[in-house]
Image 1 (cartoon, rainbow, N blue to C red):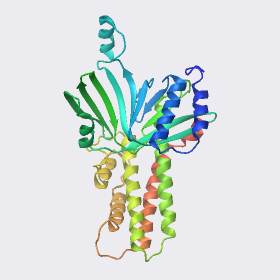
Image 2: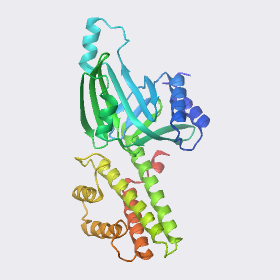
Image 3: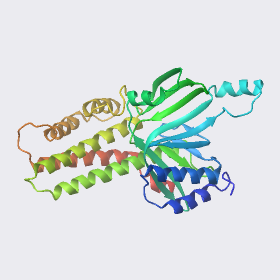
Image 4: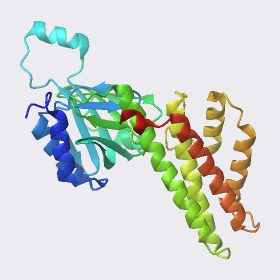
Amino acid sequence: MDPIEHGTEIFGEIAREFGSERIQNPQRIAEFFERLLSATGGLVILDFLDAANWDRIEGFSLDGDILTLVYHDFRDVEEDEVQKEMRRMVFPADRYLLSFAVRSLAPVVFGDTAIFLLNGHTKTLKEIRSMYSSGASEMDISDSSFFEKRVIRKTDEGWEVRGFHCTPIYSLAVVPKNFNFSSGDSRQLLFHYNMDEAVNRISSVVDSLAATDPADEDAICEKVNTARRIFESVLKIECCYRDVEIGKAYSQILLGDLMKLVKKAQSVDLGQFYGTIAGLLNEFSHDSGKPIVLERAQIAALLVQLYSSRFRSELGDYWSRRS
């Protein structure tokens, strides 16, 4: 089938082959990309959380858990000097890539077709530098966003531009060519999917605390610390949504920094709320010697749930708009 005219059909077939559940095995994700590129010749859309996009995926590789997608590779393309000069006006490097420590691939079904979302694990600047310094005569790593590094390096094979995503947020969407879906639509889908997941996670914490023995202090603290991590994740998603500029890497920015940044970007003053929730969460994160009270733990988790649901509501009902 032609991937431009029948992309939605191809994606639907692949979704049925690989199932409706999230895939977390890197090798299985590699099998997905092998099947996808074989069926489409790489003629798909790759949309990014920041609304950037690719119009193709020329290839991929998996090295351990590092998945690399290839946008353009001009090394073996036959070009005369004029063609090369014209191409370099738009694409000056020899290769354009995207890499990340792949975590999962999630299908989102739309009728008879599907869109596939991807997320990863974080890597530090030191880890990224270590991965790509070998074989490079020149290399520069800069921040493209707070969750993406840009690695530009020169090797014996030419210049290479590589984006490296460093976030567990779902930040990529693989979309059929003939699906009526803009990069803005994909951006909204990614925000909604991330927030749906966050709301489901904090709801599970609230339910779990309701069934926890008041005397089991370790279990109570563990659940509140899970709520804290979810709250940090929600604030990071909100920073992306509100285009807040963050000067630290994803894994380095802490709760207090996040609340200050989001507070500045909001039209409603939630300073008192942030102070209250931070105080409650801190009670269960440190060995203060004070009593561990289940009711206060429940209040802390409920406040995270309230905040997450409030922000999720601000995004609107995406699914009804797309139906």
